[in-house]
Image 1 (cartoon, helix red, strand yellow):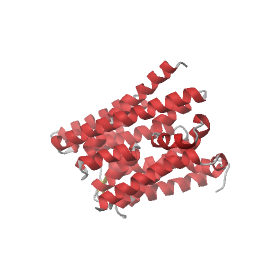
Image 2 (image 1 turned 45 degrees about the vertical axis):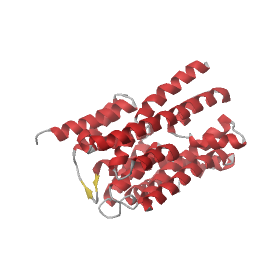
Image 3 (image 1 turned 135 degrees about the horizontal axis):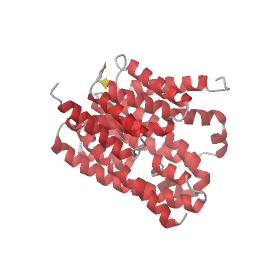
Image 4 (image 1 turned 180 degrees about the vertical axis):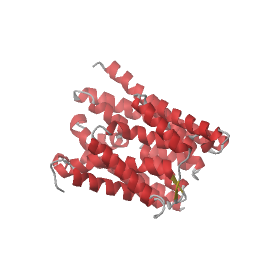
Length: 222
Length: 102
Protein backbone atom coordinates (compact mmCIF):
# COMPACT_ATOMS: atom_id res chain seq x y z
CA UNK A 1 0.00 0.00 0.00
CA UNK A 2 1.26 3.50 -0.81
CA UNK A 3 2.16 5.92 1.95
CA UNK A 4 -0.60 8.23 0.80
CA UNK A 5 -3.19 5.50 1.16
CA UNK A 6 -1.92 4.49 4.61
CA UNK A 7 -2.00 8.12 5.76
CA UNK A 8 -5.59 8.52 4.50
CA UNK A 9 -6.67 5.36 6.32
CA UNK A 10 -4.88 6.47 9.48
CA UNK A 11 -6.58 9.86 9.44
CA UNK A 12 -9.89 8.10 8.77
CA UNK A 13 -9.46 6.44 12.15
CA UNK A 14 -7.88 9.46 13.87
CA UNK A 15 -10.61 11.99 13.07
CA UNK A 16 -13.65 10.18 14.57
CA UNK A 17 -11.59 8.88 17.50
CA UNK A 18 -10.18 12.32 18.24
CA UNK A 19 -13.58 13.96 17.95
CA UNK A 20 -14.82 11.70 20.71
CA UNK A 21 -12.52 13.68 23.03
CA UNK A 22 -15.33 16.24 23.21
CA UNK A 23 -17.34 13.82 25.37
CA UNK A 24 -14.35 13.18 27.59
CA UNK A 25 -13.85 16.91 28.09
CA UNK A 26 -17.52 17.51 28.85
CA UNK A 27 -17.83 14.56 31.23
CA UNK A 28 -14.49 15.41 32.89
CA UNK A 29 -15.54 18.87 34.05
CA UNK A 30 -18.96 17.65 35.20
CA UNK A 31 -17.30 14.81 37.16
CA UNK A 32 -15.58 17.19 39.57
CA UNK A 33 -12.33 17.90 37.71
CA UNK A 34 -11.42 21.39 36.55
CA UNK A 35 -10.60 22.27 32.92
CA UNK A 36 -6.83 22.04 33.50
CA UNK A 37 -7.04 18.60 35.15
CA UNK A 38 -9.30 17.30 32.39
CA UNK A 39 -6.96 18.56 29.65
CA UNK A 40 -3.84 17.24 31.41
CA UNK A 41 -5.40 13.76 31.53
CA UNK A 42 -5.87 13.82 27.76
CA UNK A 43 -2.38 15.21 27.16
CA UNK A 44 -0.38 13.06 29.58
CA UNK A 45 -2.41 9.91 30.25
CA UNK A 46 -3.67 9.69 26.68
CA UNK A 47 -5.45 6.36 26.70
CA UNK A 48 -9.21 6.81 26.45
CA UNK A 49 -10.63 3.92 28.44
CA UNK A 50 -8.29 4.64 31.38
CA UNK A 51 -9.23 8.32 31.33
CA UNK A 52 -12.94 7.48 31.40
CA UNK A 53 -12.43 4.90 34.14
CA UNK A 54 -10.64 7.51 36.27
CA UNK A 55 -13.28 10.22 35.94
CA UNK A 56 -16.00 7.58 36.38
CA UNK A 57 -14.69 6.72 39.84
CA UNK A 58 -14.16 10.39 40.75
CA UNK A 59 -17.70 11.26 39.58
CA UNK A 60 -19.21 8.48 41.69
CA UNK A 61 -17.54 9.94 44.78
CA UNK A 62 -14.93 7.21 45.08
CA UNK A 63 -11.39 7.70 46.34
CA UNK A 64 -9.35 9.16 43.45
CA UNK A 65 -6.68 6.51 44.06
CA UNK A 66 -9.27 3.78 43.44
CA UNK A 67 -9.75 5.56 40.10
CA UNK A 68 -5.99 5.57 39.52
CA UNK A 69 -5.76 1.84 40.29
CA UNK A 70 -8.63 1.00 37.94
CA UNK A 71 -7.23 3.20 35.17
CA UNK A 72 -3.70 1.78 35.48
CA UNK A 73 -5.01 -1.79 35.44
CA UNK A 74 -6.97 -0.96 32.31
CA UNK A 75 -3.79 0.59 30.84
CA UNK A 76 -1.91 -2.72 31.16
CA UNK A 77 -3.21 -3.68 27.74
CA UNK A 78 -0.98 -0.96 26.26
CA UNK A 79 2.02 -2.94 27.57
CA UNK A 80 0.91 -5.91 25.52
CA UNK A 81 0.28 -3.65 22.53
CA UNK A 82 3.86 -2.40 22.87
CA UNK A 83 5.18 -5.95 23.00
CA UNK A 84 3.43 -6.83 19.74
CA UNK A 85 4.51 -3.55 18.10
CA UNK A 86 8.19 -3.77 19.06
CA UNK A 87 9.33 -6.36 16.48
CA UNK A 88 7.26 -4.67 13.76
CA UNK A 89 8.31 -1.04 14.32
CA UNK A 90 11.94 -1.93 15.22
CA UNK A 91 12.45 1.21 17.29
CA UNK A 92 15.83 1.71 18.93
CA UNK A 93 16.90 3.64 22.00
CA UNK A 94 15.41 7.09 22.53
CA UNK A 95 12.91 6.72 19.67
CA UNK A 96 10.92 4.52 22.04
CA UNK A 97 10.25 7.41 24.42
CA UNK A 98 7.91 9.46 22.17
CA UNK A 99 6.58 6.29 20.53
CA UNK A 100 5.46 4.87 23.87
CA UNK A 101 3.15 7.83 24.47
CA UNK A 102 1.08 7.07 21.37
CA UNK A 103 0.81 3.30 21.94
CA UNK A 104 -3.00 3.04 22.11
CA UNK A 105 -5.75 0.80 20.71
CA UNK A 106 -6.08 2.54 17.35
CA UNK A 107 -2.39 3.14 16.52
CA UNK A 108 -1.68 -0.49 17.40
CA UNK A 109 -4.52 -1.81 15.27
CA UNK A 110 -3.47 0.30 12.29
CA UNK A 111 0.23 -0.65 12.58
CA UNK A 112 -0.46 -4.36 12.98
CA UNK A 113 -2.52 -4.21 9.80
CA UNK A 114 0.58 -3.43 7.68
CA UNK A 115 2.96 -5.89 6.06
CA UNK A 116 6.38 -4.28 6.55
CA UNK A 117 8.24 -2.06 9.01
CA UNK A 118 8.10 1.03 6.81
CA UNK A 119 4.31 0.87 6.30
CA UNK A 120 3.74 -0.03 9.94
CA UNK A 121 5.69 3.04 11.05
CA UNK A 122 3.68 5.33 8.75
CA UNK A 123 0.39 3.90 10.07
CA UNK A 124 1.54 3.97 13.70
CA UNK A 125 2.77 7.58 13.73
CA UNK A 126 -0.02 9.10 11.63
CA UNK A 127 -2.75 7.37 13.60
CA UNK A 128 -1.11 7.92 17.00
CA UNK A 129 -0.05 11.55 16.56
CA UNK A 130 -3.25 12.37 14.64
CA UNK A 131 -5.35 11.16 17.54
CA UNK A 132 -3.07 12.84 20.10
CA UNK A 133 -3.57 16.25 18.46
CA UNK A 134 -7.32 15.90 17.80
CA UNK A 135 -8.14 14.17 21.09
CA UNK A 136 -6.59 17.06 23.03
CA UNK A 137 -8.18 19.74 20.87
CA UNK A 138 -11.61 18.20 21.33
CA UNK A 139 -11.05 17.57 25.04
CA UNK A 140 -10.45 21.30 25.50
CA UNK A 141 -13.58 22.14 23.47
CA UNK A 142 -15.66 19.68 25.49
CA UNK A 143 -14.26 20.89 28.80
CA UNK A 144 -15.08 24.51 27.97
CA UNK A 145 -18.54 23.62 26.64
CA UNK A 146 -19.20 21.17 29.48
CA UNK A 147 -19.44 24.00 31.99
CA UNK A 148 -21.93 25.81 29.79
CA UNK A 149 -24.16 22.88 28.94
CA UNK A 150 -24.71 21.76 32.54
CA UNK A 151 -25.86 18.26 33.47
CA UNK A 152 -24.54 15.82 30.82
CA UNK A 153 -27.30 13.37 31.70
CA UNK A 154 -29.79 15.59 29.89
CA UNK A 155 -27.84 14.93 26.69
CA UNK A 156 -27.28 11.28 27.44
CA UNK A 157 -23.52 11.79 27.77
CA UNK A 158 -23.37 9.33 30.68
CA UNK A 159 -24.91 6.69 28.44
CA UNK A 160 -22.36 7.56 25.74
CA UNK A 161 -19.53 6.25 27.94
CA UNK A 162 -21.18 2.86 28.41
CA UNK A 163 -21.75 2.68 24.66
CA UNK A 164 -18.09 3.61 24.01
CA UNK A 165 -16.88 0.81 26.28
CA UNK A 166 -19.22 -1.61 24.55
CA UNK A 167 -17.91 -0.45 21.16
CA UNK A 168 -14.33 -1.07 22.35
CA UNK A 169 -15.35 -4.48 23.66
CA UNK A 170 -17.45 -5.54 20.66
CA UNK A 171 -14.68 -6.53 18.19
CA UNK A 172 -13.18 -8.79 20.88
CA UNK A 173 -16.37 -10.82 21.35
CA UNK A 174 -15.63 -13.18 18.47
CA UNK A 175 -15.63 -16.41 20.48
CA UNK A 176 -18.07 -17.87 23.00
CA UNK A 177 -15.24 -17.98 25.50
CA UNK A 178 -14.63 -14.22 25.14
CA UNK A 179 -18.36 -13.51 25.45
CA UNK A 180 -18.51 -15.62 28.59
CA UNK A 181 -15.50 -13.82 30.12
CA UNK A 182 -17.06 -10.41 29.38
CA UNK A 183 -20.38 -11.50 30.91
CA UNK A 184 -18.67 -12.89 34.02
CA UNK A 185 -16.80 -9.58 34.39
CA UNK A 186 -20.06 -7.64 34.01
CA UNK A 187 -22.01 -9.86 36.41
CA UNK A 188 -19.28 -9.96 39.07
CA UNK A 189 -18.79 -6.18 38.90
CA UNK A 190 -22.54 -5.52 39.11
CA UNK A 191 -22.84 -7.83 42.11
CA UNK A 192 -20.01 -5.97 43.87
CA UNK A 193 -21.44 -2.46 43.29
CA UNK A 194 -23.61 -2.45 46.45
CA UNK A 195 -20.94 -4.18 48.54
CA UNK A 196 -17.67 -2.35 47.83
CA UNK A 197 -16.38 1.24 47.40
CA UNK A 198 -16.52 2.82 43.93
CA UNK A 199 -13.79 1.56 41.61
CA UNK A 200 -13.34 -1.78 43.36
CA UNK A 201 -16.14 -3.58 41.44
CA UNK A 202 -14.32 -2.97 38.14
CA UNK A 203 -10.93 -4.26 39.30
CA UNK A 204 -12.36 -7.17 41.30
CA UNK A 205 -14.95 -8.09 38.66
CA UNK A 206 -12.26 -7.98 35.98
CA UNK A 207 -9.93 -10.16 38.07
CA UNK A 208 -12.69 -12.74 38.66
CA UNK A 209 -13.38 -12.83 34.92
CA UNK A 210 -9.68 -13.31 34.03
CA UNK A 211 -9.48 -16.16 36.55
CA UNK A 212 -12.63 -17.82 35.22
CA UNK A 213 -11.33 -17.31 31.70
CA UNK A 214 -8.03 -19.03 32.51
CA UNK A 215 -9.79 -21.92 34.23
CA UNK A 216 -12.22 -22.53 31.38
CA UNK A 217 -9.85 -22.17 28.44
CA UNK A 218 -10.19 -25.11 26.08
CA UNK A 219 -7.58 -27.80 26.46
CA UNK A 220 -5.93 -26.17 29.43
CA UNK A 221 -5.98 -26.50 33.17
CA UNK A 222 -4.79 -23.45 35.08
CA UNK B 1 -4.59 17.85 46.52
CA UNK B 2 -5.44 14.13 46.69
CA UNK B 3 -6.94 14.49 43.23
CA UNK B 4 -3.74 16.05 41.83
CA UNK B 5 -1.63 13.31 43.40
CA UNK B 6 -3.92 10.62 41.96
CA UNK B 7 -3.61 12.24 38.52
CA UNK B 8 0.20 12.37 38.86
CA UNK B 9 0.44 8.69 39.76
CA UNK B 10 -1.89 7.87 36.86
CA UNK B 11 0.23 9.84 34.36
CA UNK B 12 3.45 8.10 35.43
CA UNK B 13 1.80 4.67 35.70
CA UNK B 14 0.16 4.65 32.28
CA UNK B 15 3.31 5.96 30.55
CA UNK B 16 5.57 3.39 32.21
CA UNK B 17 3.17 0.62 31.14
CA UNK B 18 3.27 1.82 27.53
CA UNK B 19 7.07 2.10 27.52
CA UNK B 20 7.51 -1.27 29.21
CA UNK B 21 5.80 -2.97 26.30
CA UNK B 22 8.22 -1.53 23.75
CA UNK B 23 11.18 -2.52 25.95
CA UNK B 24 10.18 -5.98 27.14
CA UNK B 25 12.26 -8.91 25.82
CA UNK B 26 10.50 -11.05 23.25
CA UNK B 27 10.80 -14.24 25.32
CA UNK B 28 8.47 -12.81 28.00
CA UNK B 29 5.83 -12.15 25.34
CA UNK B 30 6.27 -15.66 24.00
CA UNK B 31 5.45 -17.19 27.36
CA UNK B 32 2.01 -18.83 26.89
CA UNK B 33 0.70 -17.61 30.24
CA UNK B 34 1.49 -13.97 29.37
CA UNK B 35 -0.37 -14.36 26.08
CA UNK B 36 -3.44 -15.92 27.69
CA UNK B 37 -3.73 -13.29 30.41
CA UNK B 38 -3.11 -10.43 27.96
CA UNK B 39 -5.94 -11.70 25.75
CA UNK B 40 -8.33 -11.93 28.67
CA UNK B 41 -7.65 -8.64 30.50
CA UNK B 42 -9.28 -6.20 28.02
CA UNK B 43 -12.37 -8.38 27.60
CA UNK B 44 -12.79 -8.92 31.35
CA UNK B 45 -12.19 -5.29 32.30
CA UNK B 46 -14.33 -3.79 29.55
CA UNK B 47 -17.17 -6.16 30.50
CA UNK B 48 -16.94 -4.96 34.09
CA UNK B 49 -16.68 -1.31 32.99
CA UNK B 50 -19.75 -1.49 30.76
CA UNK B 51 -21.81 -3.00 33.60
CA UNK B 52 -20.73 -0.50 36.26
CA UNK B 53 -21.06 2.46 33.90
CA UNK B 54 -24.58 1.48 32.80
CA UNK B 55 -26.08 -0.09 35.94
CA UNK B 56 -24.23 1.59 38.80
CA UNK B 57 -25.58 4.63 40.63
CA UNK B 58 -23.38 5.24 43.66
CA UNK B 59 -23.72 2.04 45.66
CA UNK B 60 -27.03 1.05 44.01
CA UNK B 61 -27.77 -0.98 40.88
CA UNK B 62 -30.47 0.65 38.75
CA UNK B 63 -32.09 0.10 35.36
CA UNK B 64 -32.66 3.45 33.64
CA UNK B 65 -32.22 5.26 30.32
CA UNK B 66 -28.57 4.15 30.19
CA UNK B 67 -29.65 0.50 29.88
CA UNK B 68 -31.99 1.37 27.00
CA UNK B 69 -29.11 3.24 25.34
CA UNK B 70 -26.81 0.23 25.79
CA UNK B 71 -29.31 -2.06 24.05
CA UNK B 72 -29.53 0.51 21.24
CA UNK B 73 -25.71 0.58 21.05
CA UNK B 74 -25.57 -3.22 20.82
CA UNK B 75 -28.08 -3.17 17.96
CA UNK B 76 -26.10 -0.45 16.16
CA UNK B 77 -22.84 -2.40 16.65
CA UNK B 78 -24.42 -5.58 15.29
CA UNK B 79 -25.38 -3.55 12.22
CA UNK B 80 -21.63 -2.78 11.86
CA UNK B 81 -21.98 0.92 12.55
CA UNK B 82 -18.68 2.59 13.50
CA UNK B 83 -17.53 3.88 16.88
CA UNK B 84 -18.60 7.53 16.82
CA UNK B 85 -22.13 7.08 15.35
CA UNK B 86 -22.77 4.35 17.93
CA UNK B 87 -21.64 6.57 20.80
CA UNK B 88 -23.61 9.58 19.58
CA UNK B 89 -26.64 7.40 18.81
CA UNK B 90 -26.60 5.91 22.31
CA UNK B 91 -26.44 9.38 23.86
CA UNK B 92 -29.41 10.48 21.74
CA UNK B 93 -31.43 7.42 22.77
CA UNK B 94 -30.76 8.10 26.46
CA UNK B 95 -31.64 11.78 26.05
CA UNK B 96 -34.88 10.87 24.26
CA UNK B 97 -35.87 8.33 26.91
CA UNK B 98 -35.27 10.91 29.64
CA UNK B 99 -37.30 13.51 27.74
CA UNK B 100 -40.34 11.21 27.65
CA UNK B 101 -43.13 12.41 29.95
CA UNK B 102 -43.17 9.25 32.11
